[in-house]
Every structure is written in structure tokens, then in C-alpha cells.
Image (cartoon, rainbow, N blue to C red; front, side, top):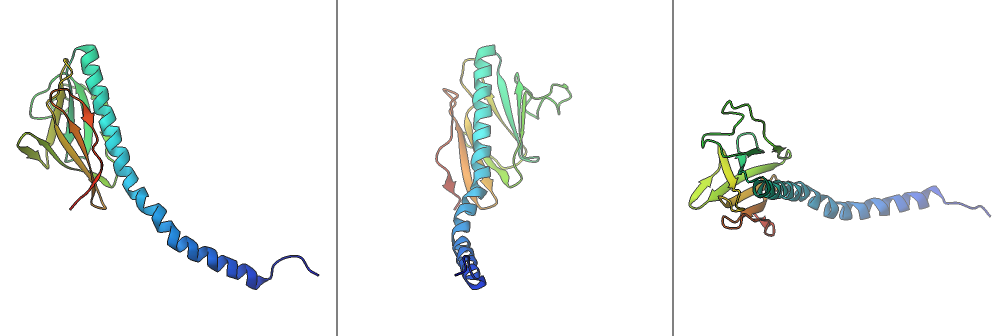
Length: 167
């Protein structure tokens, strides 16, 4: 009696494995697309929380500049002019933190009060007393999923409400 498997038995097993993986793989791959969005929103929220902490600890305001044109967050010490970031204004001051959004994650819009920004630059200022200028930043990905980052203007606290599907 021979020990081992026949070619037919091996082929049947390979067909079964490929069929199972064809049904299971999309369930694992789909959430991976949203992972970049979640990671980007957590990194931005973390950078903003750090900025608030620095503003309070060093008694110097921090400004977070969201640039819709280049999909980037830059954080600077001190309050800058309304028309741009410190480096662009020729002051030569580099940002303390710079974060480029991942390839398939985009700044969709930012809101403060009644103003809505969908292009240009949006600023959030963290003051030395812990408060902030407040607002909301909405990130989106290529699958039309979105994540919102909220900044409370009284406490300066940065929060990440549950991700929502764009409708």
C-alpha cells in the first residue's frame, strides 16, 4: 500500500481552498481601505491634542493650518496672519509638525461657526489658556467614507466621533 495523495485529491483540495478564499478575502480587504482614513484622522487628532498641550505648557498659542490645495496639516508656534502659513509668508519659520495626508485620503471640508471651507487654508488656533478657535474638519476617502474631527472652542478638546458613511 502506498502512502500519499493522488493528483486528483490535491487538485480537489486546491479548488476548495481557492473557492473559500474567493468568498473570504473581500471581507478582509474591504476594511483595509478604510484603515487609512481612520489612521489619518487619529494622527491629525493626536497632532492637534499635542499642539494644545504645547500651547498650555509653553504659554504660546499654536496654529494648525489645513491646506486643502496640497492636502497637508502644518502646525506653527504663535499666531500668524490670516492669509497663510508662516513659511509662505516669508518668515522662514518651519512648522513644528507637518503631516501629509495619505494618497487616498482627502480634506473634504472644514467648518467654524457659519463658515464652510472646501479649498484654500483653514486655521485652528489653540490658545495658551487651553481654549481654541474651534471647528470641525471632515476627511474622506476614495470609497466615500468620512471621518470628522471636532474641536471644542471653550475647552480646546479634540474629539473623533464615530465614522459616518457619506450620503
